[in-house]
Amino acid sequence: MKIAILPGDGIGPEITAQAVKVLERLRRDGLALEWAEAPIGGAGVDAQGDPLPASTLQLAREADAILLGAVGAPKYDGLPREKRPEQGLLRIRKALELFANLRPARVYWELAAASALKPERLAGLDLLIVRELTGDIYFGEPKGVRINAAGEREGFDTMVYREGEIRRIAHVAFQAARRRGRRVCSVDKANVLETSRLWREVVSEVGREYPDVELSHMYVDNAAMQLVRDPGQFDVILTGNMFGDILSDEASMLTGSIGMLPSASLDARSKGLYEPIHGSAPDLAGRDIANPLATILSLAMLLRYSLGMETAAARVERAVAEVLMRGVRTADIAAPGVVPVGTAAMGDAVVAAL
Ligand code: IPM
Ligand code: MG
Image 1 (cartoon, rainbow, N blue to C red):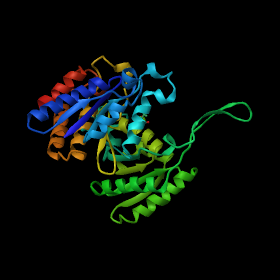
Image 2 (cartoon, rainbow, N blue to C red; image 1 turned 90 degrees about the horizontal axis):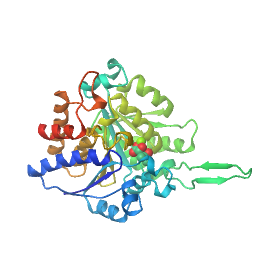
Image 3 (cartoon, rainbow, N blue to C red; image 1 turned 90 degrees about the vertical axis):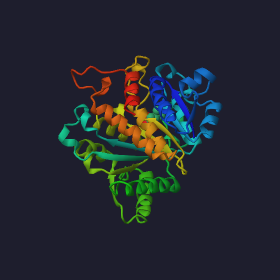
Image 4 (cartoon, rainbow, N blue to C red; image 1 turned 180 degrees about the vertical axis):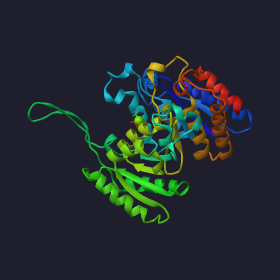
């Protein structure tokens, strides 16, 4: 099995290096794994003048799965849109048709103190955000900045969802719900947006094919509020690209740290790109303080969903749980008074637990 490793920018190289240590250990234990690295994001711009160099896309196409660190750094902020690091990520998602973004949020009880919520609010928190990833206002055309009739600059983006796009992501959500708590909450803004009215209609149609799964609908503003009021009420949250972007960052803080949450972005055949949901954290880069666990947990998802290596996936997840149980903490999840370990030491601790 071939894995493309795309470290990217900021803390990306440091955290993916920890996942590679895990891969080395698994290979020593007999798993048939190989991997190769390629630049993306700002690293792609620096190496080849393109946030998604053709050779990187080629490597990703040939691989069975992709592990990505993060993209983006302030030094690229002034570049035109097509050269911005984020475009590398958006283009690879689009090029490989990775339309299904799975973002689980669960609490490790050892970390409950690091949650933004009181522990008693965390009861039952174990949810999965299924975010559509290749449509919506992220990709809708036209978009741009123009001078309007009054001579004023005006920025515009197009929010658009095709029926087929809604249908295929809805199926992903209902099928995921069958493997979990059998409840889907579809989040939209149907009281205002036409795209959302179609979204709600199509999701309801698909829902009739899954009579064993309970479907509810919620407006996105209410969902943002309910997530901090009573996150335990959710099982699967199904939503579009932009709402999912926002709600998944919010959900991550419920669990203690955004540094703990993995994600998978899958195509129709479960080939996927796996990445921590946090970003490149330029302020932490190169300081050996970032938390590599979201990346290591992303690798576990990769082993499970794209390579079919369930035993190895569960083993990696158990190793992470064990390290947390032993009290090993990076700074983002350390309680006051606890001396944190660095990025590399956390990676080593996971390998030792393996
Ligand atoms: C994410 C990120 C990306 C997104 C950015 C970096 C383009 O925030 O994966 O959530 O908005 O999708
Ligand atoms: Mg985001």
